[in-house]
Amino acid sequence: MTVGLVVGITQKTVEIDPTTRNEIGFAFIAFAIISTLAGGLLTLIQVLELLVAFYKYIRDKLKRKNK
Image (cartoon, rainbow, N blue to C red; front, side, top):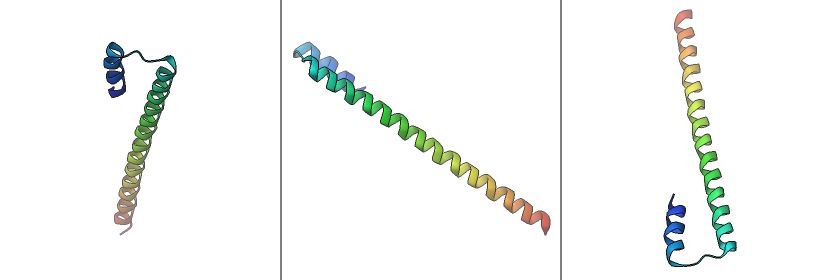
């Protein structure tokens, strides 16, 4: 959003050439993709933590049952 805001304000005061607009677009797309991948990675880490906690719960429950 920050890139869009800056470009929107800049367009009203200064003329931006097409090459610069393409570079800004590529940077915006790259940041969006990286942000999406980072969110996916964080979600994967949380799911793995949940699976580990579930495994430990089942393991402890089976130990108590065997005692």
